[in-house]
Every structure is written in C-alpha cells, then in structure tokens.
Image (cartoon, rainbow, N blue to C red; front, top):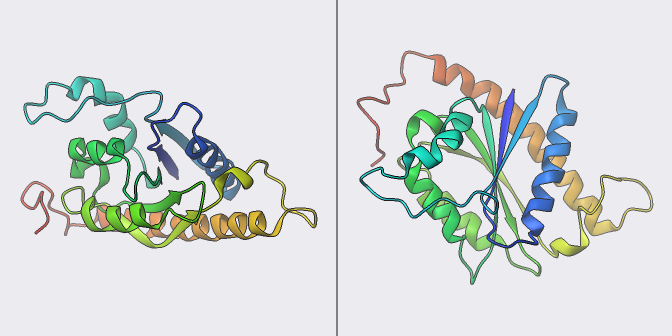
Length: 200
C-alpha cells in the first residue's frame, strides 16, 4: 500500500509539516509493507495554474507520485477561514488519472479552535473533476502547537494529545480499508475516465 501525504502550508515554520511527519509515522506502523511519501508545497511551491500547460513539466514529479499512490492524506491549515491558495492551485493541475477513485483523509490544522472550514471547502470543491474520494472520517487538529510533538502515548500523555493521536490511528485504519476496497473499483471494467473525465 502506497500513501502520499500532501501538506499545503506556506509557512517556513509549519505546524502542518509537523502533523505530516506524525501521520507518516502512524502509516508506517500499519504494516511492514506500507510505503509513504510526503509532498510539502512549502518546499516545492507550484506556479499558478495556466490552461496552456506551460508549467506541467515543473509538476511532473508530483504527477508521477500521485499516479502510483493508493491513498492520500490531505493536510491544510486554515487561513482567514479558508483553505490555503496552494491547495486550490494544486487541484487545478490535478487530473483524474492521478486521483480518480482513490481515498483521501482530510486534516484541518489550527493554532486555535479552527480548522473546520478548509475541510468543508475541500469536500465541496476539490473532488469533482479529480474524482478523488474523501472518506467520511476527517480530523481537526486544534491547538496544534500543543499536540503531536512526540510519538508517545502513555499515562503521562496530555489528554488532548491522547484524543488526537487515537483519532489519527482510527482514521488511518479506516483509510487503509478504503484503499484496499477502491483498488478493486479502479481495476474493474466500469471505470471510463476517457469518456467521463469531468463530474457534473
């Protein structure tokens, strides 16, 4: 099973990157055969999408990574109640060959009580033409500075940190099962991306 973690923060000191590294740790514990990759757009920003495709060569390594992926973890901080510009730009480049009928776990990140609006925004607007399948579970990592600073889970772990870590473990287990199930959908005769590239 190959997982790709996509991180959408613009900040150099990104808490979303910390979250992504913790998710990477959890996924590698699921099975010895699990493989993970991290695409951090903080380190590799994409130019604004252009319909002429003149920047497609810059995105080529990301395209190849997404095509071989079985499941995605999408991590975005909240900026003024919105998903970041980087994530919206990313999905303008995206093609169904990379994402169609693959599951994704959404994670909203906030230094306070936020994080929900980007999750709702992406559920509404980023799946139509990509045909990406967001699973019912999602995670809100609030007060992010105070959690996921280590991989410990014991009697000394702070309660809020325990709740988030247990929720992450539960959601990753569910994501794994969706990934296994949707492999069968992608392998079936019903999939016709060439004729039905866009949603309605």
